[in-house]
Length: 244
Image (cartoon, rainbow, N blue to C red; front, side, top):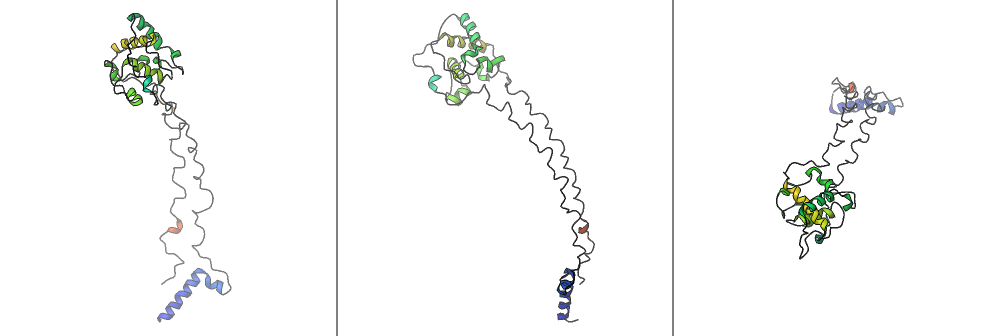
């Protein structure tokens, strides 16, 4: 067979396989045996396409109650004038035992603050004291450095810093018995202080740290029933392939 004849026969075979020849001659198009819809491609909703029951809002995604600002953490924006000893300042002097007793009472007195806190709120059981608390004052305190920019601080200045933040109150008068009493009491606490890893009041087990109820195996993670091998993808010869 010559080349023009082969080319003509090839075009005719193509027209036959696509049904175009029948259409051109006015007849119905021959159905392609591979044209039926893929049995794995039905439009019906994928049984795994339904909303994942674990996609609902995670009950543990709510705001962590311990993520709020730590009430024992000081804030920024403190005027150093409220904290630093004024010029010519002389610490209050009085009966030591009396001052210590009064200081212990004031240490637990929430009326000194404007937010219901007391010194004891943060320091109950020697909590929130850094290891440096065991050193004689003045010394470096991270809170004073970060919030006021002081490289070291006196104990009475530290009391004033705690009054301003976190107790959200005004500093005590520098010549007041109250300030002297708190200093005397804290000095006594300092004598018996031994650095330990004090527990953060917010370090209790997070109620959302429990196993996520949605962490169980997704019921839709099973093998997709439509993932089976496509029956039309078999290696068998395509009956519509024109024989060369």
